[in-house]
Image 1: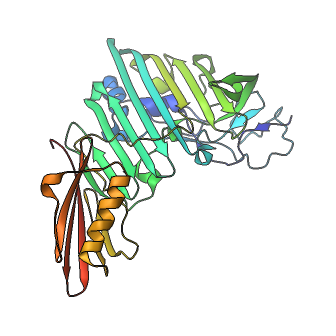
Image 2: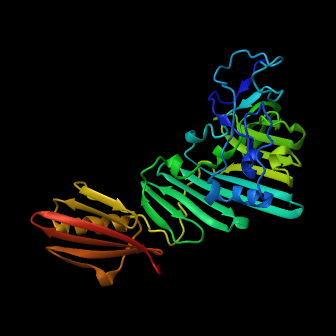
Image 3: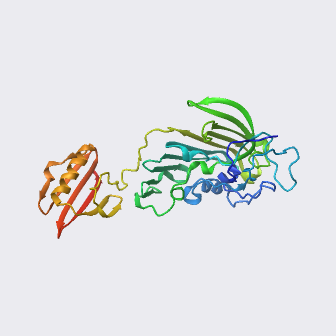
Length: 375
């Protein structure tokens, strides 16, 4: 049988329900009973708490599918796990996203059932707005049962912004890779081996290949409890939607936990303009063009400073013209300038921007300060 390889990259796939619920997991060819938490409800809640787990981490490794030649799936090797019986493989559900200029990804994970005989409902939602040029990557996390409401992890340009547990927004320079700083929700999805093709159709105006899969395709033993579907863009290979419903009891749910885990991933707003949408208490980014001979540039959230060989009056004139052309309006009461320097202030909606210029010994120092009105 020849497999349809949606992507040829070999990556780690996951027993996603085990990952969500925080129970132990080993190779898919062995038992997925996992460890027994002292309190099943604490296990479920903490596993959906981003302060404990971050994003939902894939745990089961898939075989290497980089070779898409003929594969005999009728008699799998005894030392390899048995996966699904279909001919569609998707080892990496995040494949193809890097080819998109922008998108919004929403991952919702819910559990509805009982733990230790007591009713338990848990919900976690991750929403990421992602843009390439300019670089904007804002992840918002809600998990009310864990006290997490509108936590934000973001990267905008060269800056990282974080707000957690209802605290204030903090910011700093991005010293880590963007994927490490703000995790892609699709990385929490399980890849599958041997899904069944349903056919080609159109979803949200995009031509997609629709497939279904069960627990075996995910590497799980409890095949009768898992029903999954995925819609993969025919042009680009990225996942438009991914849905899994797993109903217990089952080993991966834990000995005292019984219920239904639902995982729903939706990709939307593909190619749409991106707005950072940071919390209002986050330090704003200076949105201004610098003079062409700017040197010694230092930028942090809220301010930019630099040096120039131009006269102070010329620098002030440049910023007055460039900011006005970018829809900034001057605040007349603080337009101060002389031969040694000056100060200009502008506003654009709730944004405020102050330009301070000082010249000494042939070097002009410029500082731009951004703020939000009322903060």
